Amino acid sequence: MTYDLIVRGGTLVDGTGAPPREADIAVSGGRIVLLRPGRPRRAAEVIDATGRAVAPGFIDVHTHSDALAAVADPPPAALGLAPLLQGVTTEIAGNCGISLFPALPERRAELAEHLRVTFGLGPLAPGADMDAFAAAQDPARRATHIASLVGHGTLRAGVMGFDARPPDSGELRAMCALLDRALTEGAAGLSTGLIYPPGGYAATEEIVALATVAARHGKPYVTHLRDEMSQVEAALEEALDIAVRSGAPLQVSHHKTAGRHGWGATLRTLPRLERARADGVDVLCDVYPYTAGSTVLHAMLPPWVTEGGITALLGRLGGAGVRERIRADITQGVPGWENTVGNGGWELIGVAAAPRHQEVEGRRIADLAAARGADPVDYVCDLLLAEHGEVTIISHSMREDDVRRVLTSPLSMIGSDGVPKPGRPHPRWAGTFARVLGHYGRAEGLLPLETAVHKMTGLPARRFGLTARGVLRDGAHADLVVFDPATIRDTATFADPLRPPEGLHTVVVAGTVAVRDGHPTAARAGTVLRV
Ligand code: ZN
Image 1: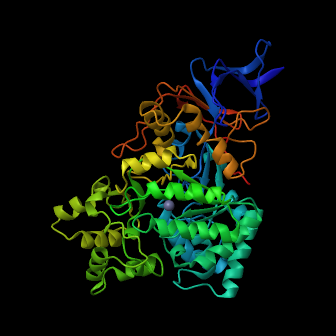
Image 2 (image 1 turned 60 degrees about the vertical axis):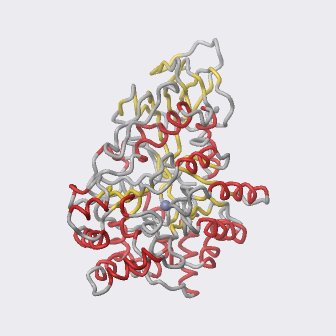
């Protein structure tokens, strides 16, 4: 028998967490065949993996890459290829409450503006449902597979706009119906982003109702908690409460305890998650291996400023007394508001993307304001106005010991939380998986190779229902990565954020070689995965 591909002489790290073992594997018809020793075999292509690890393609469970292959005007190719060049073969998008669907027809224009600003890649048309999302992904640009959650913020805006009020019963029914349809069509679960408008306007009850729909489909409730700083423990209790009452599996997104009042709180949050698990709640979390986060600049402002959406926000920033009130709120806090800057300071906030003012990308807000002799709040408001709201930031808000604790927790899997925009995006989009394997796994000795790989493959596949993926076994989909465990390392930095990792040799997507000798091929074998 002649196979399409044989990977010979490598050490299999099979994704289950089992110890590595030497074996050859083959690919036939897009599926994996484990080869027994000593049998003669032929293939159209043979890859020599001697001295290298062979693993299932990595699954990035937390991305904001929904729009990369959906916008009309393609962004720089390096943005789209960054996951592939670190061994990722599947991305799960639609996180933090933001997906490209679903929406009622009458809400799509308003939502389009929100999506344009959030994704920062140009005009976007919200889709009616999962089918529309799938149809909008350009196969000529899909190097990796993509699955999507249903973002609650999009769902809410798609039914009731950006009003800061509870839904009436008809609106809640409409949200549940759209969610049910999207999950039936193969969406991977429900996500919330409870620090962002309009998701943050939702009370716990609303989310319980929606998570109950996800539970009926056996799909997870995935949440960016209402607070990841001083109130992170209360926010975690809300998420656990939603999981218990809805019956949905709970995925805590990019788990962190940030800001000076949150530092060290993983000493309590991780044991709390383990206790909930012991009590029967199917809770897991994900994590990226950096002490800085990334989000939109307007998320640094108190919630009343962003109420009503982007247009309302921009209309407010020049108003009398508005900036004084923002300054006072940041200094004193507002109950229920995360207040990143009050927990840290403008010197910890850097600009990642400001497309009309690229000279400020990579610089800190405090320095930019000081250089102009301006107060930081005035500087931020002026920048938002000049950029039509489209500014992305990097927030250096976490502590190393917390990141390490979450990385080594048996409950965590790896997700980049990549925000792929032109400019200087957070290096996690290009460096996360190599950084876990190289820096934290090998150099710091925090994770055995098979454990690190399990957090990138078998564990996420099981969590998100990606059948026959994330494991090396007969009949599994042939998504593969070959790397050198002794040399793999991330090289992406905040200054040069898309530099590809070293030590990555081969990536196979759907049985097709997508990276050969560390270089991307012309293959675009990625598909839209329906769960
Ligand atoms: Zn998030």
